[in-house]
Image (tube, rainbow, N blue to C red):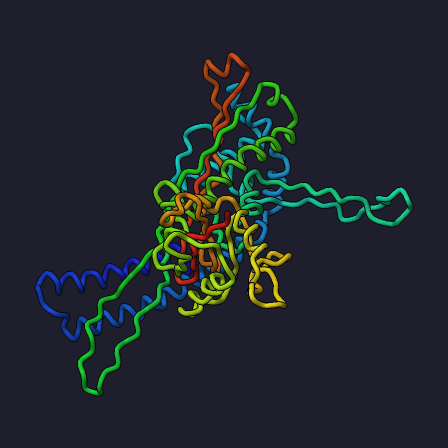
Length: 434
């Protein structure tokens, strides 16, 4: 059963539960035995749907981690597509034709199916922009040393895909977050939360009234924009030069924006950030923050272990300031045989650690005003990253940039993100690295 069908089935079950509860509330009475039995039946069915839905998300994650397998016709189209031709067509107001027109038509169809706007500029499809593809010579000859040492020459690698760099450079993705692409419409996933154990009852005691608690991670397309200036001269250059410039400039902007949102986003016009997610474990340094220690790291791990979630793609994430601090902090300052909290292999207590300046170092705790940092630990596959469609490109030329021979290239892609299992994460939000 596909993701959309599972979501619809879950929605139907939730609606039936709500109708039973609302009816009893409107009539100001308790649930009848038949209603309690029906609710219990619906809950059992919903548990099964949720389990299947979770398995489907995991499978989609595994599939999304692999390169997109294109058929021969699609691969030929990707190989022949020329970004320079497309941008020059936008600049000159001429009609696209050939493979460039085919790609834009496919991108427009994807956008329409995903429910995102595509009436301005051109829309490039996900198969062209969302995945890098490597072309590599199978053999190499010659030497790389003037001394005659044998060694193959450098094997040329060509990476295609304008925004495939998201997957390669994103710290969240590299830690193992679940990436879902090519989505259609809003995505509502059951949020897997810690249930409440059923109360023990005597053999003939009455069962408790069943009031199911339901939680949902709702993801919907959020615009992720960026823009750069392109000169008339650049637009006349080769496609490889134009594509390299676009990738280097646009992707860095988009990546910086989305990474901050993945960790600290509010969920309004951006992803739901990890730091603000209700239900994750919390480790406090002190009233006014504290320098992170080995004990704090162990507490972050224990916060997850305490709710039986210490499994999966576990690891730490923080910023460069905390990296410097932990490399100078001993695990046990009073011991003679010791090691640093963060070792030379960038591991903390055996777990991998990644660092990005997208993770804040300007948090406030008491008198530590805008100087505290965040440290996260958890199973990163329980953070969901979602992408809709491909990439929208619009080339704008007004009177101001026309006078200087420039165009403004505006790019938009659509994404969202959020935690599907809060108990899989813990955070220290008052770590002092300075």
